[in-house]
Image 1 (cartoon, rainbow, N blue to C red):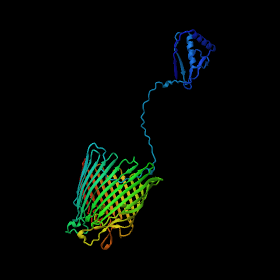
Image 2 (image 1 turned 90 degrees about the vertical axis):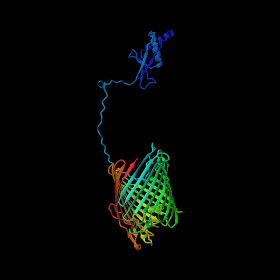
Image 3 (image 1 turned 135 degrees about the horizontal axis):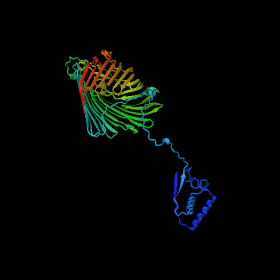
Image 4 (image 1 turned 120 degrees about the vertical axis):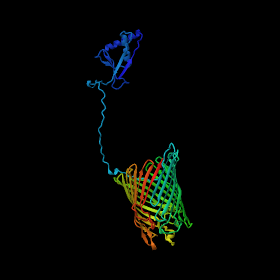
Length: 606
């Protein structure tokens, strides 16, 4: 609704004005009709202006608003009033008012009603959508990272244990986080035992430092400096009644080195991901043989928005080896791995090549990896074809067989592998995989008893390292993993290897045809936890008297342990190995200990 108020000011009377007013009045009276105003151009649509008059039956003429105001002023002056009364023009819209029904008057607000009903919805979820494949990355133990701590934080623990065969263990750990967020961890250990044979003893000492230095909020430098020393004796084929000095049978080993790596944690927002690592290692074994190695790896990944990754990994390895006869040899490997990683027709594909320069000899090898999940199933097929070239390091060979003599040389090992694997996610707790590998090896390491003209009772039994020029294998690998929350974890692995061809040696000396491993960890409650392991392997071949081929017996090992929390700072633990108490030999003529039991305590502080 619109309302217009117009106040007309009184004017002085004059003959001209009165005459004009009378003339207007006479004209209007003769017509005897009411003035009606059409809808204003500036008003709303459907709104009309009406002048209220004394006659309801009078007809209306359309005039302008200015003429209406003049007409009103003239009519007022004609009536003889000295004061012009206030006139009002009311414009009424087309809206028709309505009266509310009497029964709805004075209604108040209704009270709020609480809805306590529950709506149940059921969904039919396909079984293949209940679980999804999870492929964990390789885990690397690292120090705890705390962002900008307010003060220096110190923590550590001391572990002590003692058991039969004079088995003793001391393990110390100390960690420090400084005010800049850098983490420093220092560990030290000493372990030793004495068997029934007077030469069947081992003593190990190890020290390791790990550091994490923060460059900024996304970059850090990780370092590791380590030292390990092992002292043992060759007691194979040596009678316990021997009175020769222990120095004749010494089999000591020392290893020390350092690792450095640069890590960047802001990989999601960067086009380029670069994480180089550098490792320097030195090992000294029997007969004053030494081996120094240097390994540099620089994985480089370019990530694009269309799920396309371009990899350009670079690796360099160098080995300097001096045998006991003062013969020196060097090996070097330069490797490039350019590849494309993309998704095509719902299939993940890695396609590339691997140019390799090993000791100056150039070769190029395929690098293919394909992964595809079958529609509406939990089956994932993975297949690939690649070639790896690795340095044979003295420390790695000694970790496999601690009784080896110093090798004459350490050539590089080539492995061309074609494989196919089926990964099955049975449920959210259980997953397993089955796969086959067809491998072609060059310079694969075998270990056999050394043919020594001297009596073994004088120097003990050594194994020699034999590098097979060419060997082809068919391997069957099966894995199974079950996890229930964070309380129970069971892992199993089966590895069966069959040599289809061996060019030089008669047998794959020292290689286990079948190996089964199973491990379990169970946290019963907040104080008690268990862990256990089972191993079974079939006997490896070795040469006997007069170069005959023998096979060692199959072995079954059972280990178990428990840990109980006495308080916030004290824990008690018990460990048992070879609980079946069955003698076995991993390497011929080196019998193991019987059942071994050890118990101890752990003190923790922060």
